[in-house]
Structures are given as structure tokens and as C-alpha cells.
Length: 275
Image (cartoon, rainbow, N blue to C red; front, side, top):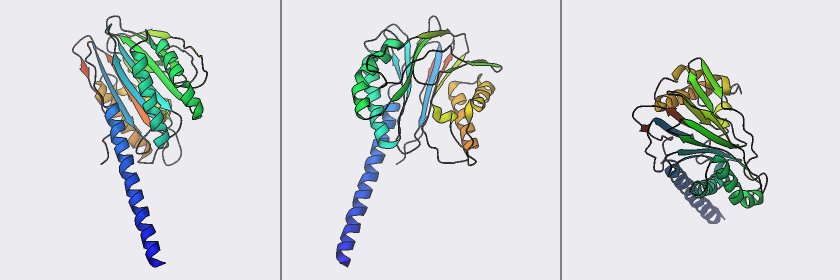
């Protein structure tokens, strides 16, 4: 009996270690995908950050330079956590990469993505919220469409920050033949656009209080004159100070786009991969 118990424990220990290695490998793959090739732009800075609540997560962001010189940005949040959400995130990424090559604007992109993902999402009883935007560096017009996602914030100065004009849309996987509406905003030099998932505003401290949009606005207002990487780091630092290392329930993801007339600075940063 003792030898059987020892053998069972040995097999269980081996299976647990194998699973742990596979999860870490999945995280590495996910971080590599989020840290993919970055575009070369003019007249702007862009950066992205994603921190899973668990080893792997369901948040997603991506950049795609269009043949006409526009930058297409997407940020999304898969319903759920962990491995199932990460698998759906990969499907979402594939749908975006495919749609970005064949659609004319954000609304068409989301419509094509919903068509591609609807069947799988309904089978899995899941949804994905997504915000897709095109930035034209020549006209500084940002056009965008939303599939149930938070609208981005535009920081115009340390005293002026507002959400982009409203546009409504159903989450991907909500309706089989849904089409999405589009809106736009005219950006000016040195203005910042902040895209985010609700893991930021809903981050909690030990008392159960949420970070909320007002704290986020204050951080952006105080740091809007800095480079996008520095603004990003300020948001991360503010979140860390607020949560005081409390384990978060949701993934945290952001994309920052800043308009410049001068030299381009394009980068992407993610949380370090755990080995």
C-alpha cells in the first residue's frame, strides 16, 4: 500500500510539474505575440502594456500599419480568465490580423471579426469586447468603432481630458450579423489618446476600493507632457501604489498614442516573462 501511495504521489508530482511548464510556455508564447513586430511611424509615439491577472490572460492589443499609412490599433478583453481566455485571445488576434488586411476601417474590421468569431464564441458561451481605431498621421483624425469596449480618453492638457464621442456596439459574439458604427475625433499636436481595459479602473486595494476612472484621469493629467513610455510607467506605478501588491482579479492592459509633428518614437513594453 505504501509503495502504491508513493507511486501515485510521484505521478501526481510529475503531472503537476509538466502542467506548470506548459503554462509557463503558454505565457511565453502569449508575451511573444504581444511583443510582436512594431510599426515604423511618423508624427507620433505609441506603446502598449499588458499584465495578466494570472500567468496567462485574455486581454489583447495589437498594431497594424495599413498601406495608406494609417495605423490601426486594437485593444480587447475576453470574457473569462486563465487558459480558456488566453485561447480565445489567440483566436481574436488571428481574426484581427485577417480582417485588418481586407477591411477599409474600424467598423468593417469589427464586423468581419464578429462574423469570423461568432460561431466559436457562441459554442464556448463567451464574448469579447474590442475597440478598434485608425489614426491618420497626415490629418490627425482618429476614427474608431467599439464592440462593447471602454472608449479611449483624450488628454488635451493637464486641465482638459475627456472621453472620445460616443459610439455603441455589441460585444463580439453577441449577434451573428451585427454591423458596427464608426465615429471620429480630430487630434491636435501633443494630445494623448489612452486606450484601456477595465482591469485598470477596477483594480482593487486591500479595502476593496477600486482605482476608478478619476484616479486614472489624474495620473494622465499630471504626466501628459511626458513621453508615452513615461506616462505608461506612471500609470503602472500609481496602480502598484494603490493596490499595494493585492492580487488582481482582472488583466490590466493599455495602449497610448501621442501625436507629434517631430521625430517618431515607437515602442511596445510588457510585463517581464516569468521563467
